[in-house]
Image 1 (cartoon, rainbow, N blue to C red):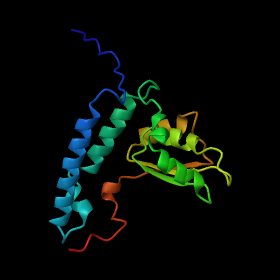
Image 2 (image 1 turned 180 degrees about the horizontal axis):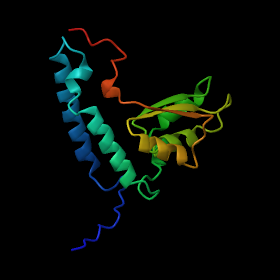
Image 3 (image 1 turned 90 degrees about the vertical axis):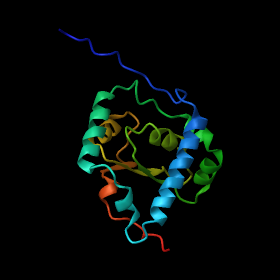
Image 4 (image 1 turned 30 degrees about the vertical axis):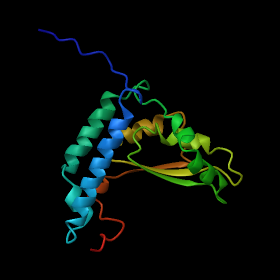
Length: 170
């Protein structure tokens, strides 16, 4: 018996109730802070790493392979207009902004932000894009918005990286 694969699904930022997501995020943040404060003897990253990194990398590569069409990763052009104060500060810096995006995926958030920062009096903004998925970084590099002079990328799983800051003191 032959089964027909399901049709591609398109996701949009209005496909969910944002207020529920905010409430869920606040609950997660509270649990995260509790986990960090109750484990003062071990660094936060060891407490919070609950997924085997190799499985995580495979899962994200599979996700980005399955959704590699341009219809899935729509540019999030609303981001610059959603954060006008931040954009004003970035545009007013004496030097072009340097952006770090962790979990950049295919660049759906990064490229609209970079475009909104075009025209800085001292030059173009630059970015370092980090993702655990090689497939995501491949999609990022294949984007018409990708400019190797302004966007660097790094395949990195931060759950395996020692913390950049010392653990909080009790």
